[in-house]
Length: 355
Length: 247
Image 1 (cartoon, chains in turn green, purple):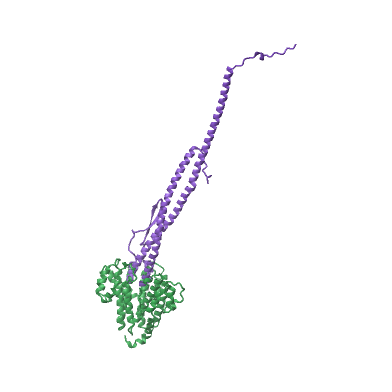
Image 2: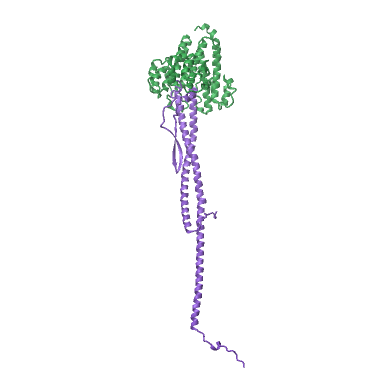
């Protein structure tokens, strides 16, 4: 990447995205949000943020699901503005970001097709960021075979499908396995693409994507305990990148319980710190207010990496980072809203603060 | 009230039957009373259990919906995947019947035979699987709770009905049937007494008449006897009254 020309192509968008970043909710604002007693108070507090225009027309008893939907609308509007103003190669980068959502959408539609539901209703449930032109055509296909041969081959995801799945797999494999296989392929592809962009995008994105890959690895390991997923299948779902690839992954593929996972993670200095104070295992009940899960720590770490990417200039990582931060922020806001509406004030501070 | 009685002939046989009926009514009354007491005891226990269960329910449901919020925080919306991957019921309820002093109460129980693994155990494989499993477990307890509450609540309604019915019967026996039978008995008794008295009077009367008649007969014989003893001296002179001779 030639820094000299960066501003000519991407300067405007980088400026916009940095502006967006400044609109993220800050710690004092979070404090204000957590002080709210009712959803109306929360709405009033959110009126000072970027979400104001999306929330102002909502009728007063606002449910958390509408809040979540409106916040997502805000995110989508901002992202689409970026996409509309992007030229090559940023537009390609932005497209890559949306592939992840596309996978989820396609999986949703496949699930619907497999169970012979009317997939038109499902289009509304799809994440707007993962919307692609041929997606409505997916609804036309009534069998999975059709879906694969006529529609998916034309979608941007065709490559991932071709590499890992045959049409028969779509019928036979568990839909979650398909989803994870696709995500794995996507992650690897995205990583390779980022490497091709050259420094500094490559190094920044590699940090973030490696973390993402490690998180997937750990999660898949932990979540596959006690399920029908065999150890070989488990190993196949691990993304072939990340700090734990390949050495720790081969070991993770063979473990049977959470303590062994912990032992493996502790060999990595960056994860060892994360494990302190974490209650591993789903059986812990999670009654304590200060109960921190591994997932929370991963979120925190992801936020940290994404924040760090704003410290450098002349790279595309900011777009990805901003999107991730914004998503985290929406999760936080919805979490706070849930806590308020369900009157579980003691857990209200379990969000992952950004700034 | 006192006038209400069965329309029977006041005979001794009817008195015996009515007395048997009274005995039967009293036995029935005490039996029903005991049944109603047993049911009431049971009812109170159920009411107490319902109260406990309802209080607990609030907490459990709150926990459950909050665990769903946790899932939403980590993974986003999973409802569709979960709905679609559910192929057969993992939680089944079987109804049994329980006999409480002759009342059949339905008791719902979780059918443990099914057990079975969850079908969406792979949901959230990449992210949030633990939270999903946790939410699942919490909701499972919530559903169990609901089932328990449902069987209690049904028992409550049925028992309420039955207790009312039994109490009505007890009261009917106590305040209507038994008094009526008692009235009948006393009526029959009084009629019989009346008949007795009539009979007695008649006997007395007859006796009186007989005595009178006997006395009359006695007097006649007596008179005859005296007449024989003191046969009057025939005064022939007096008997024969000659016509005055006029000269």
